[in-house]
Length: 213
Image (cartoon, rainbow, N blue to C red; front, side, top):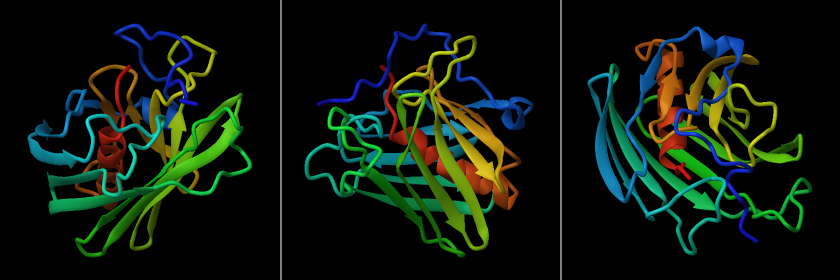
């Protein structure tokens, strides 16, 4: 059974509820959905190019059959070009998944630029009746936690699909990716720092496997 990405319709100006750790950061626009199979956009003047293996990709929707490499993308960041190849697969059903849920698929991305980095995100926990997506990005000794967010500003009712993602460093929220509208909005540390680079690369991967409803 297909998992519904939203429990209620979202207005065009809907926004993800922000944690204190991200609320004070400047907001940047990150491309514009729907993404389609390939394209380019600018992130503060830095070019992002992507290629996707399907017209629709979303961590809260079923994985298209036979799709092993859903995403490739590159970012011309402050530290030079950064290129990622992302794979996908279906894990065995976990204890948090009910028979009525779509089985969450796993996204795994690798960056070869030294030191090499890896991102993996898939099934999380059931919180307030919603099955989350959780994972981590790792580059060298830096680990960035990733978790889907499900609350909109001004609402106490969680949405079934992600309205965005939070990024955590040493247990604290340090960045966010707001996917509530057609234009993703990113709040991040300075992208010239190792933490800002990690946030940016993770946010690009998560944004490019999300679709507006």
